[in-house]
Image 1: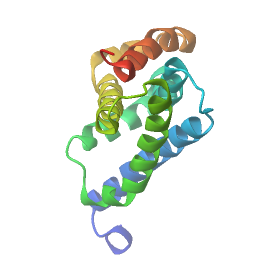
Image 2: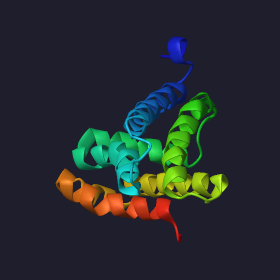
Image 3: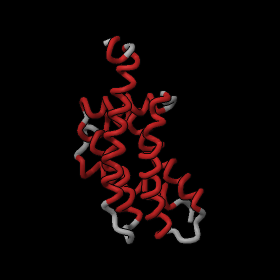
Image 4: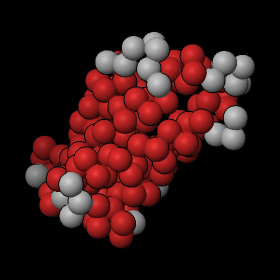
Length: 156
């Protein structure tokens, strides 16, 4: 292990980084599939779907996403290489938001996307995330999508 990764911490960091990359890739695929005319609810569903999948799968999937969310509070330096993927997901979400919320400042739209991402991370960490694992996927989506859409909509 030391020869290939340098340390146990480096191996763990790499595994968590790869899990985050897998999550971001899934989120980007969902967002890329949206039409420019997508509604805020469709955007919220696409944005939250990878997290909803982890929450409803429970078990290992939820444990991995919880670990990623914990580490994301104080991310390791290696996550810098994922900045482009974070930006791509944000850009895709802002594209739809800008079409749905004309006249809203781009910085505010980015802020709303980041807040929505923070809510999803919180769900992974909070006890409610484990509770959602016992719920059917359709119910989780019915409960979560309006909340994320509301974060995107803001007060406007």
